[in-house]
Structures are given as structure tokens and as C-alpha cells.
Image 1 (tube, helix red, strand yellow):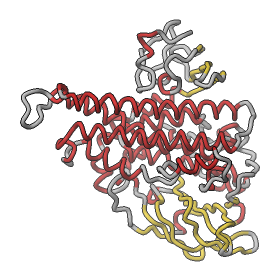
Image 2: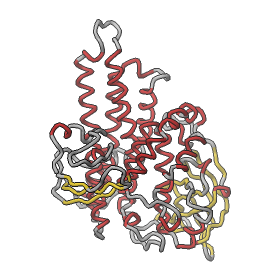
Image 3: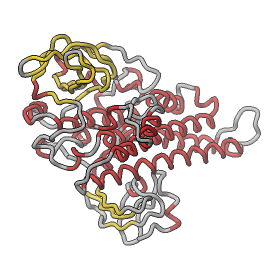
Image 4: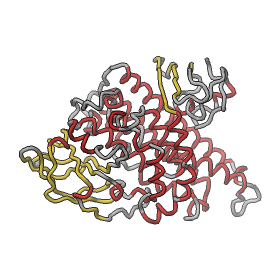
Length: 447
């Protein structure tokens, strides 16, 4: 069926009618995946756990996509808990225990753990939508959900003995990790001796396991990912940041920690997944996994910033003005531009993700250009969301500078998260290199 014209304008901005023709009920999911005007058929009915979508994307490719609506509903149910503890997370510089418990109890932290180890093995689109929903309530909560899922996904590259040890006490495991600033690994029989210091390990205080890249025997071109218990490292309290304060992204230090080889894997594009990780999720490229989590945190925050400034414009009378903020042409133009850049960046992201996921489900492989497409979509979604936040704050004026205002939090978080290596402005250059036949300067593009 075609999306009716009166509903098409809702697609892409996180809204849609409760019921589409044919009686199918989808909440907000459909608008978060498909472009307005896409040809869509659906088999999901009210009360079903999974939504099955088939359709044609912007490049004319047929798609089939499944999303677990129960997980998106679960994310919505804990929104009030998350909002109630926002201030605590900012003040304590780590997520509140109440919010972390809610993420555990809903099963959201098990989304990328395989079913055979007690996880949910959710697909990437579901994960993206859930992270976006959580982040609309609090970016720190969104990041605390997003980040550990990445490292749970990487466990697919471990030997079975390593993965089974990590999940030996159950699936509710939180892994804190970092990529790109390697520790030192000295080769020993059966494993490595790890030493060094690494920054940006989000959620490290609440982690069960720590993971990090490590350069083997001083060779920076030979790196392994190593997993070790949190008790084996020292946490150094360094996270005094402008934004994303509630993520607890501190440094860790390790000295002569032995890591057996079965809790390591080489950071190379070619790998064989463990026996628990034979589903398509674990064949999805690293760039695609990153794209479902890193920019979606900012997409959720940007949507809230636009909603809040729209509410403000309806009631605020700017200084030295006789009319409401909504009557100013500059406010009108900036609001429209914020909406446009956010929707366009978001739609490119979900369109690219859905096409890449379909390739994976079909058993295909991803070319370097297709991987670059994922990096491009991730980077553009991030920069679009940041621009939307900046536009919303410019409309709010002096209201945005007060610490009691939600706008200053959105702005601080945006100015922090936009520097993440996977979605920073410099990734446009990485993508351009690939499009011109030049090897990428960002190694993770090939993973």
C-alpha cells in the first residue's frame, strides 16, 4: 500500500498516525525506517511482537525488514524513570543505579547478546530505534545502552571459550571498552601480558568486563582486542567534561594483567564467528553497528530540542519585543531549517542501514564502498543532529544559556559527541577517499 498523502508528512520526524489503512498498528516505528512515499506492505497486526515490512527504498531496491516493537515499547516505559534521574547523572558524572537497573530489567542491555547465551539477538534497526528513544529522555542513558552493545557484538570474534566465560554468570553483563588508543600487549605462551592506560571507557565503574585494543609486542600495526575482568584494572577519575557528563567515561590503567588468548581476537577484517554467533547480526559490518548507536543518541536529543523550542516559541516574548517569539521570521526560518536537516540526516541513516542489513540477511558481503556508505550516513546523521540542536538553541536565545534550561544540556552534549572518531567531520574525508579509489584513512571502515 502507499502511505496516504495526509500521513506522508509525518514520516521521517518520529511521528505517524496510530493506524494505517488495513488496520495495522505500528506506533512510531514505520516513520523511523522508511521514507515518505516509499511503497510499503506490512503483515504486522495489533499486539504482535514483530513488525514485518517490505518495500522499495530510495534507490529502487526491494527491502524486507523486521523490527521488535516490544523492545521499543520497553524503552518508552522507562522514560519517566530516566528523566527523573537526569540531574543525578549530570552531578555524579555517571548514570544513576535506578536507570541502569531499568535498562537491565527491560532486557535492553541484552539486545546484541546471542540467544544461545541468554540474549535477545535483536536486529540493528531495532537497536537504532531503541537507542534513539532512550536518548530522547537522556543522552547519558542512551550512551550507556549504546556503548556496551557494541562490545557485546564484538564478542562474536572471540573463541567460544572466551565468550562463554564472559557470559558464564548470565546474559546481564555490561562491557566497557575503548578502541583506537591501544594498551601494550607482550606475547606469552597461551596469551598476553597487558599494561598501559586508556581513556574514554564509558560506564567503567558499572562494568563487569573491560575490553581494549592492544598493540602486540610494540607493533602498532598488529593489534588485538583483549577482554579482562574490571577488577583487574584501576579506574582513574578523569571524566570532567563539557557534555555527556553522565556517561562516566573515565580512564583505566592496567599493569601486567594476564589475558588468555581465548579472550582476545585480532583486529582484522577477516574473521570466523564463534558457534554462538552464526546469526546475520554478527556478519553486519562494524561501521553499520556503529551507525545504529553513535548518531542515534544525538538524533534523539535533537528531536527533543526541536520539540522544546517549538513549545517555547508559542509562549516566550523576547526582550524589547511586543510579539511572541513564534512571530519572528528568523525563528520561523531556523525552526524549518532545523526540521529539514534533522529529517534528511535521519532518513539517509535509516535508508542506508536498511539496505545494508538486507544485504546481510540475504547472505551477501559488503564492498568497501558500501561500508563507506554506512560511515557517510553515520557522519551525516551526527552533523545534521548537531546542526539542528544549534539552530534550536539560537531560536531560544538567552533561555538556552541557563543551566535550568534543557537547551544548554543539549548543546553541551552535541558539542561533545560530535567529536567521536566514528562520526566526526573528518569521516567525510574518509568516505571521499573510498569513493575516489583511495584506501580509507580510518581502519575501522574495513572491519
